[in-house]
Length: 596
Image (cartoon, rainbow, N blue to C red; front, side):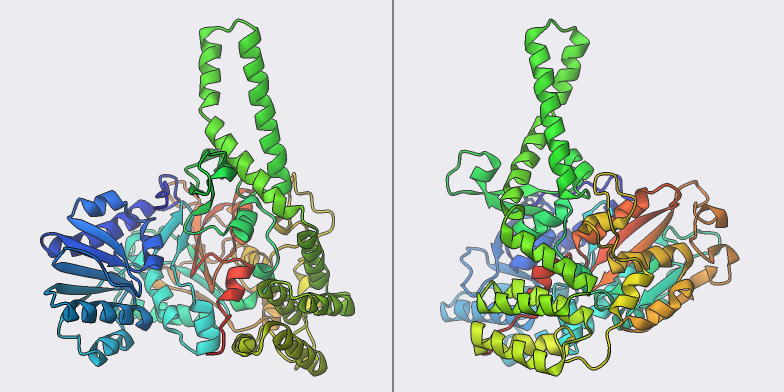
């Protein structure tokens, strides 16, 4: 199981949110007396590992199993299924129960849906004639704290469901999660949203507040000052570019899952041939907290300095006589040695990927596409990748970036590349291409692209970016400032009004509104900094902004937001929430589907 992150330094009390989720799960288990087998769907198991320790579950007489198509082996007479509300998972449960029946086993079955029951899932139980045999309940897990400033709603497929399947149930889920936060921290008085899905979430949230109001007495100041909702659709350029921060690259190449990575033990210098080891990555690791958001080039230098300094100290220790206090200081330094070793091993492993000509070529091409100056060079490069049969996700990632920055491709080029893709990778990928077209990610050009206008107006391409001493968010992509974060910068500083014309060029409507008891209060007009006098909450803390990405956020964007927070004159703290933490590959993969 992953390491549970330390939330002591969170800008709001996230520990209470986590403890509430723990308590709700333990109450479910307590109410089913005696020994029981808890069967969890594996994806949900990953999320739960950030909420509760396995040992705590075992204290309540629980035997743990993972749900799969295989039948459950257990001596328990009580079986509790804890699953996300997905029909395919319910079919696994039905198959398990039918298998028990065929063996003549008498068991008591409980199915708990996360975060809530759905008609579709209950219908599967009815069709299988099992609805009378199972007790149904809900485990309302809407929010998983990933770190002290990052929350996940764990909705992997939200973006694809909204864009391709027309299923907007995830938007209700996001609104419910935010409303749940409001019950703990008060009604958020300022709301800014951009994008179709975000405006819809704002609407559902206001409806929830009308139907089930948070009692915010006029005297109590809400802990979160502003909510900014942003659709992934508004900025699809950023997640398709290769992240160049340390944490971003770890995710790109080693796939961070729920705050940890799994890799060969030998990479981490462990003598366990062929075995895998899990490395937790969160702010509990002090060195990781220091370097996670930096450009990778800088991280390598910092680790080198730390190792050299340690070596010098060691040499001094062994060659000169030291006082007791100097010895004590040295031992203190030695305590950080495991962290330094861990990150030197990881950085060394990352370098094997980042130094490959294929990766450097891809980076170069991403910059060329974002610059939007050389259409033919980009087209030829993508065509060549297709003919070389490079990994399909790599090709689609560049192709979508190319299509998005050009507002689609001319019909002749669109048809040609589509045909070549199916020819190279097999006609079963036609469903994937249809999904991408439906989502507007790889499509025929219907109007002129306004990417150049947006890029110039928001200064998205920054020449001579100093990655070592950055003064702008563009350091996270070595020269490209994420569009999403530029918009958030404006939303915090001065609201939408000054960038209204640019917002109209981007997908979906935008909205700026006041809510709750403070909707008439002039002091909540903007977050433009100290001058307006609202940047500090009465007890002296900085004002807090909750930024929600509907459709996923990348680690590079999180790093850019943390960078903004650390800047002088920025008088607010940020909490970042998202349907899921994504990168170019995982985002593209959600649209990939084989025919049949």
